[in-house]
Length: 481
Ligand code: SAH
Ligand code: SF4
Ligand code: F3S
Image (cartoon, rainbow, N blue to C red; front, side, top):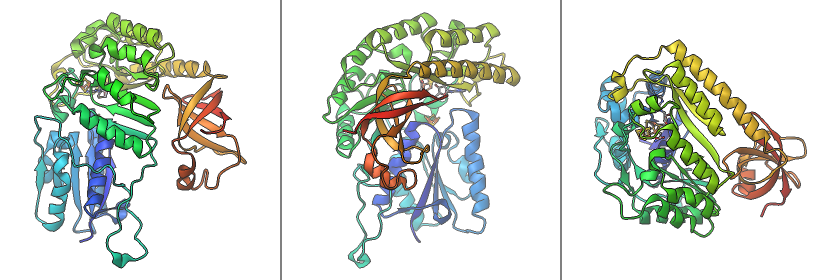
């Protein structure tokens, strides 16, 4: 049997990181990553944060079942938060699912998949939570791309090569969450908070920088409480930031997500002190009314949130703040909702993710009432999003004529005759499409791979010439350095 696989990923950055790790681990065991139509094994890495992403998993598996009708050996593995939630239930509902694994169980997934490939009747569930951060096999130096066969195929399996072209790296610093916000399923699907050791975090960051990463984002469900669980080794989040920021060659450092209740004054000060810590913070507000925040169990109120915003802007006046908001939490009145709009006006978030409240199994808000009718929830969501669009547009407009350092990520979809456009981000995290000076490089706009090698990960200085609805248009003012 040819060991070929294809991975589909839903959900947050942690799932993206998990899928990336799994792909590397499989390639290191001789598996090949191939397009869907050629794969023997399908891995679906799932998200359960709202009902919609959960439903997507079932429709994806239904689609696979239809697609695999003519393929008797169809085999799938389901990982991530819905796998943790539904567990072995997948075996009954979709008989071709032969492995389920949760966020701690993923460490054992590569061995389990090897076993499935050998034993056509095997079915495996890896759903236990571990007591400490589950360090995984180190596969960082391996590419997720299956290498081209060597010219002399008889010389043995070609070695995996480092892909190393990614200018951005995401590094996990913890797993799970202890907050149990009333609406949230994450503590049930990802388990208790477990911090990763500072040494392991630093070692991974160092390797990433050596492989060409210019920007690192530290990831966790609540990074501000890093180190405060049993797995902590005495290093808190502010200290971790300092140590990572000091790595030679690291141009930009970001982190997500921050819970307002735990943000340490030392982290706020770090925005004014660490040169490579980007002036950008995602600080989920969730709701603008004190009463709703209390029922959500968020443990801060409007005044405390506004105090944090003020302190952040004192430390770093150009800081770009973004947020998450939920509308239609059980019991939310029109007046409560008006206070969310008002907070949006006061803070003037650069952008936000806003969601219609969704009942999740087992969470505290499931039993809270009255539920907000769907039409009202939808209408509030639209009002919130149109206010955000206006604020986003105005804040982008204010940057016209300014200059910014842009870290290039990929050739832009926008391409003009004679010029080359690259997509990147400014320090605040805004997307900037930059018109590059100099001649058009071969491959730009067409062969992303060729031009990717040319400029990906470069920092350029750009003048912002126009604000679009959700991004900026810039012109390079100095050659890349
Ligand atoms: N750990 C992060 C967020 C994780 S979930 C934090 O605490 O900020 C990402 C976002 O999904 C949340 O910020 C919240 O806005 C949204 N969300 C979570 N549960 C939800 C639910 N039941 N209904 C609607 N939105 C939800
Ligand atoms: Fe969910 Fe709250 Fe934990 Fe974020 S902090 S993951 S919203 S329980
Ligand atoms: Fe979704 Fe799980 Fe992430 S529920 S948002 S994949 S932690």
